[in-house]
Amino acid sequence: MFESVLIANRGEIAVRIAKTLRKMGIRSVVVASIPDRRSLAVRTADAWVLLEGYSAAESYLDVDAVIAAAKAEGCQAIHPGYGFLSERADFAERCAAEGITFIGPPPAVLRGMGDKVAARQLAIANDVPVVPGWDGDDDPETLVGEAASIGYPVMLKARGGGGGRGMREVFTAEDLPEAIESARREAIAAFGDGGLLLEKLVTNAHHVEVQVLADTQGNVIHLGERDCSVQRRHQKLIEESPSPVVDDALRERLTGYALKLARAINYVNAGTFEFLVSVPTETSSLPLSQARERGRGGEGPDVYFLEVNPRLQVEHPVTEMVTGLDLVELQLRIAAGEPLPLKQEDVQFSGHAIEFRINAEDPWDGFKPSSGRIDALSTPRGPTPASRQETRCRRNYDSLLGKRIVDGGIAPRRWRGSRGLGRYDVHGVRSRTWDC
Image (cartoon, rainbow, N blue to C red; front, side):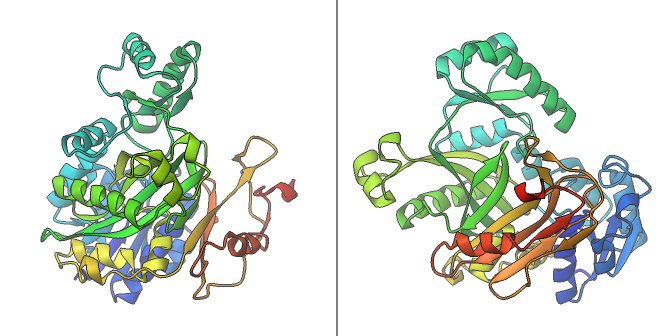
């Protein structure tokens, strides 16, 4: 096992990783930009290294600076968290060249799954259903013609990256040219790649993802599913496990697809395989068992593969709460070359967990990020065995203030979680309607 690990991230995920490292007796080192030099992550880690910059490009995305910090502190491995360098194949390759273990999938997986077209083609090759669409030439004239063939409404997507960037819902042919231009512009700014693809816009759908773990010995298991359907501008807001629309038969289909794809790409470490689950309109209001009988010839709802997120997810705590497993610890053990400590039949699921993301956004101004100094912050009492708080209050890079994860027992109890949200008290920025 590693003696020292560099955390190449910030905020709540850096704190989260540092806590597991401390539990395992591993020295933690965190990098920090100038605005983050007094952050909770810096105070939590055993050591920290200042990155001389203010913006992400000058600090957390500076590969040379991050590698130099790891070498200066004698770190044998780097955990990238999520975002920033977590999906960069070139960074993983640089780590290998410097003799540092990258805690994540191998570069070949990152390079292949970082492109939505490559992921889509992998699914097709392995008989996993995908949303009808077009992933060929993406000049405007071709996209206009293919959209007409697919039929409106359609979804434009950036080929690279994620997080809702470069995505546009298009309902008429008249709106498509402007959507192509704006989506391409946003994709170039966010990912440096303006490539686009088209998919049929699937309505009445749930966004359901499967958590997968794979070691270097070829063992692959799943840790159930999460439902991430409550979103705004394609950004997740509420996640829960298990999904309220997934029964045992559908779960077997989803996890089977995820494991099949993971084996096909020789996946290693933690990853999330994302799907759309679409119940036909005429049966969407029925219980799933009745919808299966009346909807799709006994097979249940349509399932479409979306993409692979080859990293730890923001919403991973709900999986930890229903399985009792520490995903960061498992990531570390896999990266150190250890086999998975459990088989699929050993995974036990208990209860129902839900995660709420608390954002500094102004509900009276289109939920735009609300900037400013946080003068005071109080959160619901915890953590307890039934709740978990993960907070980040230095918001120089995004509007996420923190997360509240609640165990609802044997059935979904959203009231329990939402009651706790009412006890958040944030002064200085806007985060809810009564602050306005």
